[in-house]
Length: 478
Ligand SMILES: Nc1ncnc2c1ncn2[C@@H]1O[C@H](COP(=O)(O)OP(=O)(O)O)[C@@H](O)[C@H]1O
Ligand SMILES: [Mg+2]
Image 1 (cartoon, rainbow, N blue to C red):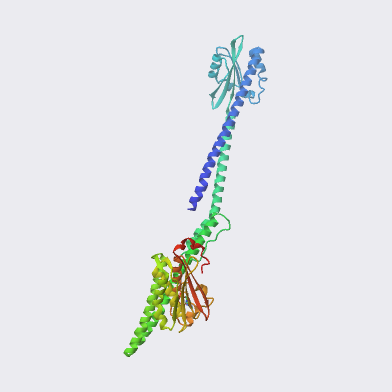
Image 2: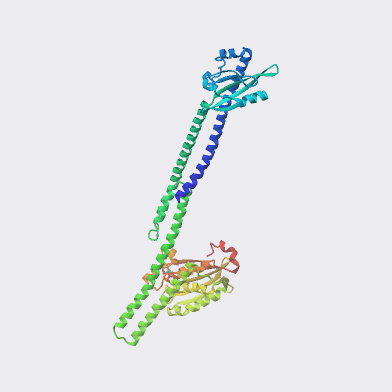
């Protein structure tokens, strides 16, 4: 994968660089080659014109030989590297001067052209292993062609220079390209090395080792962002993972307690013959534990459905007053059994949109707690009143109250306060977390106020039918 990123960053850049370099070098080379050829051609022409002039004015042949050394003013054409030849108007050689090997060369094409069109012409011919550059320059007098001056020089030095230049350009190009590619490869490799480290760490993070985190480089770039985002994701996963683990542990613990009690009682009952009354007592106790367990299982099921998103509300128009009274009727026997009095104060017009069963469950759970945590003979007040585009249901008891360190946590799953342990009150710690979910999915909220020894008030605010619009302005609803 890294190789892939690396290659896809570096190789296209190198290809582009190679193209630019090649174009640039080609331009330089062709410009340079043209300059060189023009220089040779100009030198030849200068020589030809000068030789023609001498030949015409200094009486030809003999003068040419005598002045041969003088017609070498051009440094590009030293005397041992040039041929000067004078042709008659019909093309035959009148005189020539130069090294013997050059004399073998012939420049017929340019000579013919010069004779025919009376204009100078260049030509490149091959002599041995080297090329030879010719100029043929016509010289006229009295309106007719008198002779043609030919000057020739070998191109081997120029060609050697050009081939040296080609070699240097290619060498430079290849060196530059290699350096840039290797540098790019190294730099991208370094830039990607944190990614490789992160991948190695990420591979180690598994179900058993979810507390490890990526080391985010302090670079302020995309890689740091990636590492931080990844760590945030693992944080959330770890939270969910721990929650599931805790849930499973707590749930099994909750179920094990009643099972242990039942097991002990039944074992004792089986060990010795008992009176029918005593046996009935054991069965009643077992039934109580079974009821308790089925309540726990019901709540666990509700929570599992909430977590999986399966728990949905069946919304309808609900009369809160009626719902409240129905819940109270349900808990009346329990309250009476514990010598508690339920006082209901309710408003008449109280319709909300909601799920009646769930709202009854909510009020029922609050009543259940109030009854459980009240001393015998206590009074529990249930009120319903309009408040801030909605209604507040409050359940107030004069019971044991909740310790201030427990208060912020009573809505957590499986959280049971100190009072439940010291007083051996049966429960699972799930009731209030379900209440919270019901209140919030109705667009409302739940709060608690309590004082140790004096009692507690649980208040639920629910938006009224028309209050959808204002739902978000209700932070201070309660
Ligand atoms: N009315 C109340 N009075 C005193 N404590 C309460 C009351 N309601 C709830 N609590 C505290 O909040 C905890 C969580 O309540 P809940 O979720 O209903 O669990 P449970 O009733 O199964 O213990 C209780 O264990 C208890 O400590
Ligand atoms: Mg409860």
